[in-house]
Amino acid sequence: MAMLLFNALFLLAFLLSAAVQYNDPDALAWIVIYLAAGAMCLAWFARRCPRWLPMLLLLACLLWIGTLLPGLGSASVDEIFASISMQTRAVEEAREIGGLALVALWATVLTLRGNR
Image (cartoon, rainbow, N blue to C red):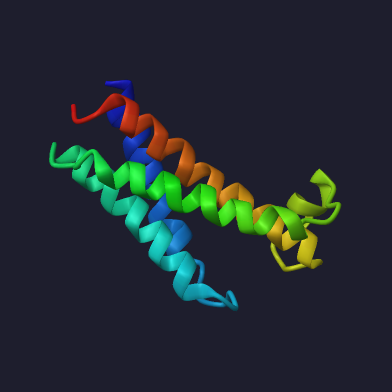
């Protein structure tokens, strides 16, 4: 039962995340990753989530995080959560890593859990 609830919460979070990307400079990439994560959640509900889908999303997120880490400057937790607007590039990249980490986390859970 807990898996159903958490999967529903992640599905909602991924769909809402995709919806708020309209003003991002690289909106298409973010919409694609969040909609793919949402599709993964829907496929898991339908018991039709192929094992490769969450593994592919996990790999994509880890690679993307790897590209962001070298340029990551110092951003405090206060700066990251203080305002929704882009403060500095470091703050934006820290937020992007957070979003990718959430997708990676749930992809890992569904990979380990398999279909219901």
